[in-house]
Amino acid sequence: MATVSYVSHAGEETTVEVAPGTSIMRGALNNSVSGIYAECGGETMCATCHVYVDPASADAFPPVGEDEDEMLEATACDRESTSRLSCGLVITEAHDRIVVRMPECQR
Image 1 (cartoon, rainbow, N blue to C red):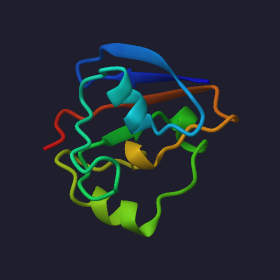
Image 2 (cartoon, one colour):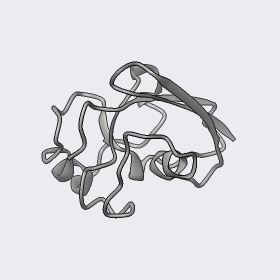
Image 3 (cartoon, helix red, strand yellow):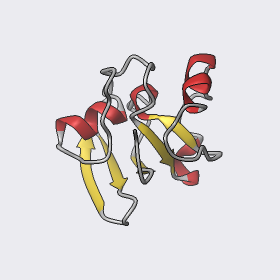
């Protein structure tokens, strides 16, 4: 299990345990964390699961792929250097603590 902290745009932090094989998006939905809508259900087709990965956690995941890069261009809030779609960030046994910030808006 990895500890994932979801930080809202207002600074409120919700920390949950997320099992290996589970995406950060699914971890948020399974634990009723607000701020991630996931309208496409995790198919990298909508960008409503956009998060900013804390720089200390950014290298814990593979680089942005072509499909994700295209969808990140369509986010409702500004794209930053650590912007990712949380549906593609899958927890592994190697992860311990991950911190993500939610943008002000997703739609």
